[in-house]
Every structure is written in structure tokens, then in C-alpha cells.
Image (cartoon, rainbow, N blue to C red; front, side, top):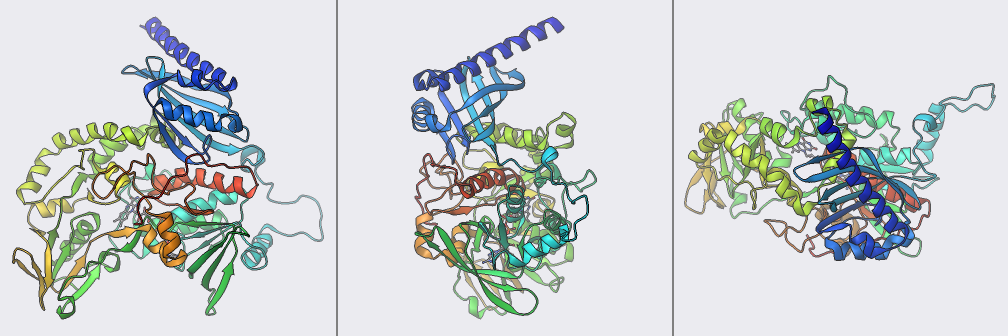
Length: 607
Ligand SMILES: Cc1cc2nc3c(=O)[nH]c(=O)nc-3n(C[C@H](O)[C@H](O)[C@H](O)COP(=O)(O)OP(=O)(O)OC[C@H]3O[C@@H](n4cnc5c(N)ncnc54)[C@H](O)[C@@H]3O)c2cc1C
């Protein structure tokens, strides 16, 4: 048995190593056709910054050839080598790789089918000569000896906070100080890129604190770590919102982030000749608002992937005698304990709001306007996330970095195929639950191609509920369900197009958000915003994600149609992982490293 294993392991290793050495030989010889011949007809090469100075996936051998022909000379890849033990399953060999480029060091991952590359991931880890000050390179922290002009750590931090943005301009301004902006700022600080976060809320973490009181993260702790400081081992599986808020505040402080709270970004204009932005902000340091003009070279929007609240206008809203709130304005059910609430919508926020209102004793009706995907939280954790992000994964030696890179190694074009089996299994495992929901009249879906939650998230960022209990209330009729479209408001409630009238003291519009670009347009102007275009989505040509195919998330973490303008955000996993690649792109530009972008994505949709 041992002998068989040893032989097959060494066969896999031999296969992978011979592919890697042939690949490196072809790259070194600048022999594009030899390199391309190592790829299968169906192949995907996903690059995070290392070859393309972009986040891009090329598909098929013609596109691989084009990429190599364009970038090979200037990227000068060397030292491709296998890192660790390759594995093999279902006819696919897999291995981690390391390599160098002219300016950096990278990590890669390859999947071989019949000895040819099916998927290849290449990522930039660090820039040579600009490595983070970690481990052996960590700062000393003090100055031994005697120095009458000694400046303490605290004094130098205070001086920096005083001068940055006033007598010295930051390289980067990040608008939005939620988890996204904070993770990026932490990385930039480690790379020595002066940055300021501009945040309209007072304190880091407020974007979570200000949400309704029952909110806890929907993703488990293993998925949520921030860069550099993982959550401790006693951290709850699902962080309650205020606890997460406190963590972000602590993190901001200890990571020494220049965080301008109570600061509103008003406008930003780009001066082409100077290559700098003029960002006008209103800052309140406790003694009243002052206008400050910042002149960064790079501007990052981290204002949340959701843009402005999508607030539909219905006839008769003005005559309604009750209260109308968008879900983003809804503080919770207090004051409506024995009253009638109608929630328009049937996705995450709608369910959370209905659940909290039912617990408070309100009479609550959900109006479902279109089908929704529901997946039970424990099912999601077990079937979709558990292999990479769970206590078991940790026990199996899967680090957060390995998990993130493994996830990143799956090209978006075929990701749905990897996702679908988990949801097929969920349909069987939770059949009774889904049957009950359907019997209650709930219109369920699993995505346009049955690929479930994560694909919906990546494509449109909406249309689902991770069930943490409220779906059962609908199934049991404790939250009343009505299917239909709102026609108008009456004095006492809402009337649907089929004539159904629903009485309400409070109507909550859980009708979602528009694209991030809609909020950004208020700051950069409509012209620039429409040139940059829609943010988020893959161009999958599924509901709310119009084609053409992009292969990557639109405009996220990569160069856009506006020079020196960037977008950052996503869930905690994406913020953690992609902040690395965005920070390296910004660092390279600060250092004047040549960063020609391969295949800058075109903009096809204004919003
Ligand atoms: C019920 C619910 C559960 C969720 N569960 C999870 C989960 O489990 N995991 C997860 O990762 N995500 C979850 N999310 C999504 C979560 O909201 C986002 O992941 C997260 O907020 C994104 O962080 P961000 O930093 O990109 O954006 P935000 O947290 O939205 O931060 C953007 C910041 O920009 C600021 N801002 C906007 N305009 C300006 C301006 N002009 N000037 C200055 N500042 C400005 C805002 O005040 C805000 O603080 C959940 C959301 C909800 C509603």
C-alpha cells in the first residue's frame, strides 16, 4: 500500500515538475508557441497583478499566446518551481508554484489534465526592494543609547497625524472607512505608502454599529479575518455587529491607520497634467466642520459595494399616514411591537427585518416581488465553505492564505460548475425545508444556472438570503407572505396590482441598492462616473449581470478607465485578499515602477 502511494505520489510529482520546467524553459527562451503548447485547448490563466499589472483572466490558447507575446519580455519570469507536494484527484494534478518576475516575487497554482495546464493562477506577493517590514525586517521600536533629541514612537505618530493632509500630502486617499478601506490602509502602511482614510462616520466600526441591533455577520469567523491580525480562537463563529465594530476600531488604532472620522468627501477632480487629485472634504475634529483639500496621486473608493439605496417611487406615497423607511434607514422594530409592518422585498435585509419584528411581536407581512435564493447557514458552512474555511480546515493545515489562493485559483468562467454540486446536495439535504417554503407560496430559486449563493453574490450582489432562522417563520406562516407587485400606497397601507390591500403602520422598502458607481458619481461627477461604468459583476449575462463576459469583477481592485482611480471592497474575505493586490499596484506606482496594464477592461454599462 505504502509502496503504491509512494510510486503514484512520485509520478504526480514527476508530471508536475516536468510541466513546470518545460514552462520555465519556454518562458526563458521567449518561445511563446512552446509555452502555449503546454496548455490544454480548454485553459484559463488567471493573473493577479504579476504578469498583467491588472486582475485578468485569459481563456484558451490564443489568449494565452497574446498575453505572453505582449508581456514576456518586460515581465521576465524566472525560477518557476513547485512548492510543496503536488496532489492528484479525478485525473487532475495540482501544485503550488513559486516564481520571480523582473520586479517581484509571486505564488502560483496549476491544475494539469493529461499533462497540460487546465488552470493556471499567478499572483504577485511582493515587490523586490519594497518588502514589508515583517519578521527579520520588523521595526526596532525604540532607539537604544542616549539621545537628548529623542522622539518617541507616540510623538512621531502624533506628528504624522498632524502633518499628513496639511503640510504633507498623502500618496493615497481612501474614501470610505469600513472594513474594506481599513484593510487596504493597513497594507499600505506596511508598504510605506502614506494614506488617509476619509470616513463620514465618527469612529471606525460605526458602519456596523449603526445597523439594526440584531445583526451578526452571515459569514463564519474563518472567512472573515483581517490582514495581519486574525481573530482570536475564542471569537464567535458569527461576529455580532457591535463586536465587529469594536474590532475594526481596535485594528485601526494598533495598525496606526490615518483615519479621518467625521469627514465627508464632497468632490474629487483629477488634474491630468499634474497626475494628482483635488479631493475636497469637510472634516470635523470636534471644533466644527472645516474644509480640507487633499492632493493625493491615487484615489480609492471603498464606499461599500452597494451604492445608493434603491428607493422605488410608488403613487400615493405622500398620502400614506404611516411611516416609510428604506431598509438602510430601519433601526429595528422598537415602537412597532404591536403594530402592522409590511416589508417590500424578500432578500437578506427583508428576512432579517421580518425576523426581528416577529420576535418583537409585530404583525408582519413580507411582499415577495421576484424569486429569491435561500440557503441555510449551517448547510452553506458545511457544503460550500467548510473545506477551506472551518475549524476542520484549520486542523487539516489549511491556512487562510492557502484557502484564499485556492479560491482564487478557480477561474470565474468555470466557477459555477464547482459551486453547483454543493447546492444540488443542499436541495436534497434540506428538501423538507424547501418544500415547506414552497407550500407557503415562497418563490424559490438557486440562481439562473442553479449555481447558488456565491455566484449570485459575484454576479449581482443580491437576490438571496442566508437563512439564520427567519425563513422558517415564513414557512410556518408566522410572517405572512404575499406575492405580487406594489401598485400604490393608500392612506392606510399598500395596494398590490392584483387588488390585494395590506394595512400598515410602517412600510419598509427592502428593495436593495444601486451600483457603487451611483454614490461615487456624486463625488467625481456624472461624466467620469459613466466613463468608468458599472462596478461589480462578471458580465455573465444572467439576471442583473449583463454581458459581455468580463472574466473578472468589473472595476474591482484593478486599473479603471480613469487613471489613478480605484475601487475596493467586497465581503471580508475579498477585502482581505484583494487588498494585497491593490496595495501592490499602488506601491509600484508610488515607486515609479513601470506598470503597463495588459487588457485594461472596457466599460460597457453606465450603471
Ligand atoms: C444583514 C447583513 C449581513 C451581512 N453579513 C456579512 C458578512 O457576514 N460578511 C461580510 O463580509 N459582509 C456582510 N455583509 C455585507 C457588508 O455590509 C459588507 O461586506 C461591508 O459593509 C463592506 O465593507 P466596505 O468597507 O466595502 O463598505 P462599508 O462597510 O459600507 O463602508 C463604506 C463606508 O464609506 C463611508 N462613506 C460613504 N460615502 C462617504 C463619503 N462621501 N465620505 C466619507 N465616507 C463615506 C460610509 O460611511 C461607510 O462607513 C452583510 C450586510 C448585511 C446588511
